[in-house]
Image (cartoon, rainbow, N blue to C red; front, top):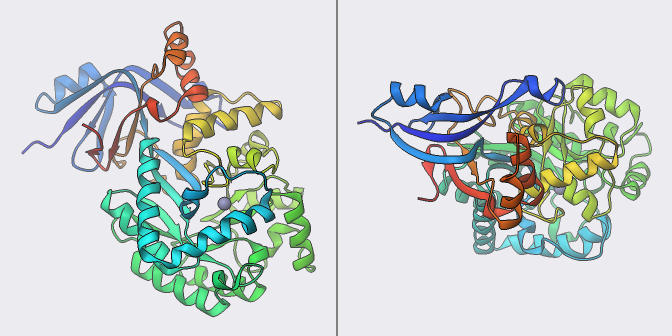
Length: 431
Ligand SMILES: [Zn+2]
């Protein structure tokens, strides 16, 4: 039986990193493109005419002038914060204490964890996000619920139990030993099961004792195939706090480095206020950073130097940081990345913005052999963008003279109405 499907449309094709090469050398759009998929994978990417002729038995789905992109990859989210997104008026430490910790306590209840995991994943898919890297809560059940709900939707996801053994409410604290034991049993159960990937997840240095960071560093050394995710240099008051908690550390990064928590497969969210030594070590060790622009402005954190860090060849991902970020949409997140780069003197090109939300995020999560690019052999996770999804966008894109002029209004003004379709491992979500 022939399970091949041929998707026709404009295809976003990335051949290299447009943050380090001229974007026009790295990314192109084929206005009459096609993507041939089978049960789970992309088989070929090419021109519509050629692929139609060579695969006459394939079922055809014609998207017209819609843009066929790799599925969006959100490189840093907290799915348990779904129900408290857009909470008013606090900066990082007060925000955690006022909103985050009370909400995370509710994940002790397996039914609540499952309900929010399902709600979050459906919202993400509505916004064209097919893969994400999520923090859970300290409760192992919160990780199980997330992986189970993602598996039910066929999604490739990364997640891990958030570890905290100080400076958090007693009901949200584990210990160095239980963080090690729980993380170990979760990663042994889930990492590599179907499309699940495990990330060892200390929340951030202020909520872990050095003993807990030692334990998690040891676990990562035993399981270097897993990611290690945490937060770095988000707010200036946080950095002062870290300095008081770790008086021996050279800087914030050193609180992780001293415990074996940097390097390949380490992913740090935010990374706004970095010292020169920190940037050097991040670049030398292949550590990835994740830009969370809506969160960084919403919580009042600062302006990440995306262009400067990219020039150092540091792997960069893009993320909503749900629910510190104020949107589930990677389009809104691309728009915020554009605005923040403008405030730092750089105009990111739409090719760079979509690349960051797909191949860039996939690279930051070490999933770049699986997804993030339209090419043969990759997972058939696809997001189809309607470039005229609202009257305001349509009146602009209809006047466009180039594909990028047509794409940019959707990046800046688009929302879930721009998501015309989503494919997950070769399965169409809407029909
Ligand atoms: Zn975060």
